[in-house]
Image 1 (cartoon, one colour):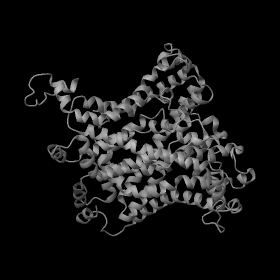
Image 2 (image 1 turned 90 degrees about the vertical axis):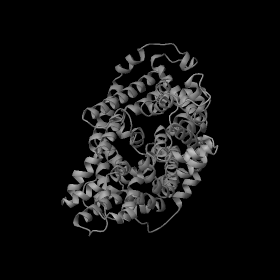
Image 3 (image 1 turned 90 degrees about the horizontal axis):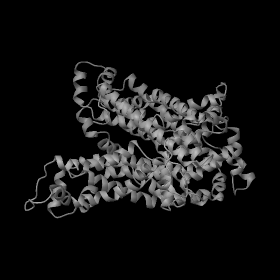
Length: 300
Length: 319
């Protein structure tokens, strides 16, 4: 990227003009509109209830405390939520990647009978689906409701991700696979030892997409799961922030007095704890997805 | 059957006799094994539920299951269109989504243009990271942040107080609910939306800019005369896709931002479907009829928008 910019000095070498400063200022304001709310949330989770009550416009607490976190973890539901979400990821992510990659590679191969029909079958699921009731009944008849498998299987394949991946595979030179084939490698072998090592950007992108989808999934869990201790993190978080806003008695096992004392701090601690992994992984994977989406996106 | 019939297959030597389709299939047997896992998933969790939509034309009996329940024709649809809360939900959904389509749609484009014109490489990356970040959070997390920031005694209101301005009840008022939906959605998703347009911009031939500079075009002129026209096909595709979602979307956002005070204005079609399916009643046939209606309207809108784009001379989604 930087080499290209040196060759063609359209942007970057000229002096900053008034227009550049205006653009920078606008973007800075927009970025602050995103950063300040998150910063505020994090700071409230470390502040005492009194300080928050005095000044909700809290950018740096004078008195730091972990009381909100203590109360949150004493409640315990957040830990079981974490456990369930990690199970979803550990089983779901490899399964999703397997289903998506094998099919994307298969469909990116040269012509073979029924290829168009199969591709259309995938594409069609993007614009039309059976909706929640038939899916629920099918999960039920497969005896999957009430288990984490229902949440895993409902989200383990996305046509959008597959098409993104397929478009990336199309950009790889066919001669590579042809020579592997002449050496006697089968299609599966070619996928794992020739295609995948060349596909880091798209693999990182798709891993991020599925990972985030599993991390954020809650609707399927709300419908398919029955017991509170099976619920993934997002559902637990929802119970803490949304439900307790309207129904204060929902603070469950935590000492009622303490719950009301720390309700705001505790809620914000729960929000922070739920988004920390995304905050950590997102910037690492972000550099890949520009490239992955760029090569894969919207071209048919 | 068709693709094989139209393409005269390159026959393998020594395999002159026999059906050429079968030869072709046999030749590609390894490729088919690649497709099997995905196809099994599609059949089980995409196409069986589509078959399950037949429930809309049945009288569902739990003990008989989807396939065994007796047919009832259009009985369910008659009830659906007589339900005033359904009609309300449809209009509310259309109202909210059309507003979103008009007001929200330009933001990612403007953001992409701004990011593209920014002359600091490092700053560009940093801004991009910050602006796309909220997209990757669930609406549950975002609603937590929003509830904190916009609460009656929250950050924004205390800032307004410091400036001596009147405080606003952002989340607990019916009249503010729809503006809040727009605002929070713009806040959450514009940055990510901009990525697609940035990708399109990066594909523009640099020579066009160079010759425009030689002709003395200003940066503003280049933006309006080169960048925008070049990303118009992408804009069209994104617009078609948005039109195809006019009857749905927004469940996560609305379900998590709504509260007791906004109950009367927050029941969009998806929330209505959820309520009649899993909360107030469990008439599965009735709610399947509603979701079938929703899916069909969405699909019709998508195809219509696509036709319209082609009629205007654009690219469209399907060819």
